[in-house]
Length: 228
Image (cartoon, rainbow, N blue to C red):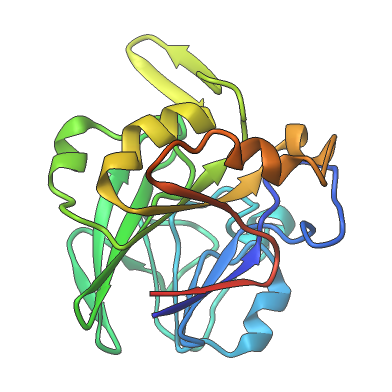
C-alpha cells in the first residue's frame, strides 16, 4: 500500500509551508481517509472514510454545508450534513481493502473511530485523534506494519479534559509511543499542534529524539508518501 499524507495541521490558526493542510490521507490514490480540505477531492478518490466529524477532518463542518459526494462514503455516526453517509458498525470492504473499525476515545459529544486497513497481507492502523484507546481494543489489533497517529501535544499527558467519568481531548506523543510502540516497527506522526509551529525546523527533531531502538518515529509533512 502507498499512503500519501495530504495534510498535517491540527485545528489551529498557525500554519507553515509544508504543514498547511488539515487532516487527510490518500491510500493507493483510491481511498480518502478524512477530508480536512475541500481541495483533497480533486484527487478523485473512489471512496471516502471519516474517523470523526471535527472540522479539521471534515471541511464541510467549518462551512456548515451539505456534503453529498457521488462516491461511497463511510463514517462513525449519523451527521446532518451527510445525508447519504454509510454508518460504520463493523468491518467492511472497499475495492479489495478491508477496513476494521477501532473505537477511540477523543471527543465528548461525538463518536470517533480509528481503522486498521488490510490489503494483500499488509496491515496499517490510522488512529485518528486520541485521548485514549482502551486496552481491550489494542489487544485485538495484532501485529501492524505501520501506524499513523497524531501529535497535537508533544508533552506527556497531552491535554486531557474530564466530565464525570468521561475523558476527552488529545494525549501526548510520549503516551502514544508507550501505548502503540509494541504493535508496529514504525509510527508516523501527523496532526501537529501549536508547539510544532513555534519551531517548524526543530519540530520533527523533537519527535525523533524520543526514539529508542523501536519503533521508528517518523514526522510527516504535507505530501509525505510512504509504502508498505
